[in-house]
Image (cartoon, rainbow, N blue to C red; front, side, top):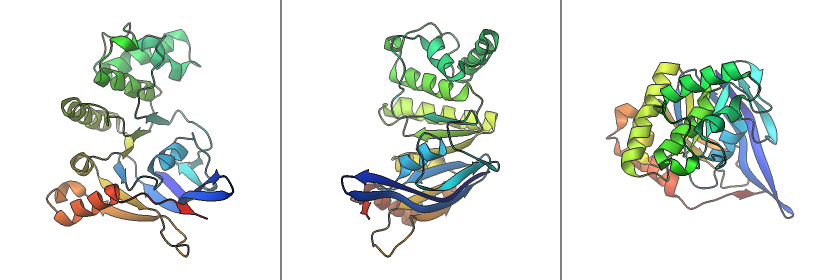
Length: 249
């Protein structure tokens, strides 16, 4: 289980403090697929980075299986909007960056297995410039999975891809989730994909009034059964496309 307790994140902006998250609390069960949605600036990506140990929270803590996360962990993998592949390294060596502390034999076995999982078993010697956008994101997914994490964080990794490639990768992620028993926490802006690929949707809303102390979270359970629910779809749509609002303290 992933426990997010009293998480706040305050950014310094000249002489003012800007609150991206305020006293956020969540419990995420093992093997859930969770979608985070909300307006620009509500703290979705910031929360993912804190969970991944890439960003330090101003207050609160995050626990995975009762262990506090303070830095990047092999139990948590993350895939970003951009594949972020090193252009001077081939596919094999890009993935190897995640397991440099292991011996060469272990690296070879793990990378080979992971490339098979993402459908790139014959592509280890290719260079980033030779990859399509979808293939590059598969390499990024492989780099996150090669450490055999329990949690996979997805920060809009398919937003720049065409609809056909995006649909294929969504299906592939669902297959990986089922076979590897992952917990997935993702940020997406496509309403249909968010609804159809989630066990829960969490709508994050930044407090608009100074007297509001906490980041508000609206929980939609089992959204797949409500694909035609106008109320839910309108709620998600309004939360995504609402004008940005970051609270100044």
